[in-house]
Image (cartoon, rainbow, N blue to C red; front, side):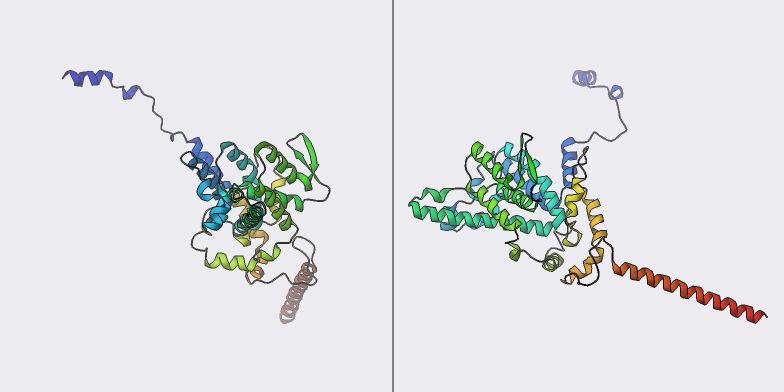
Length: 350
């Protein structure tokens, strides 16, 4: 028929189309996500995904209204879930970009250094402490000023946590060190978070929660909040019982016994050139396993390292000398036995 003849003429000739036996071209977006998923620990990865998710949701409705810490709703409506969820909100694309470059690298090192469980506890503690102090201050200001508008102030966003983490790093920095401010000036490290807070206040307005985050980070860095931190035995018991069937088996979860400690910062500081900007989780966990293998048994029992003639890992030790002496004594004993056996054989031959 005419229609069949027309379709035959207009359809492309499959024999003339180039055919390739190789694999189809990869999706660059999927490849970027897979690389991010492989190189980023579990807690840091999911915090960043929460920022992307709430930013996408903001196209349809404002997530700050149901999730932000607003004293009127948190206290008088008893919506206490806002205290936990308010730090994980992002509504602006520019903020999302800054969060990626500011949080992912620091979060990766902190999680590799302390373990996923401890890092998650640190984030929750920072968020809850900042929100709790924020509620107390806003209620006090509302009573003193007789203004109900203060109860509608909002506290939300990942910067509630980032300012605290930044302050912790600056408090732990060596005395007298300095940091570069976007390449324009160098300022003392101890004042760096306050300078960044001042710039944020000039560009986006004063945020009480950011200033409170700096204060909580300072207290944590000075060790005033150590009493509220779980000890390693508690973390291990928690991971062995409640999380063994789900979170511990997740890709990128770093258990407490496999954390790198301070080596997470020293190893990362060595990768300053090229595109080796992040640490591989597989290499980190293998290194951590070898590093803490000798201490894992005592950590699992909840005991501290014993005091005595021994020294820290990686340094000279009297026990090493004792082991060498014992080995030499065994070798001499074996040589003596061989000599005695040779003398006995010679006597029998005679």
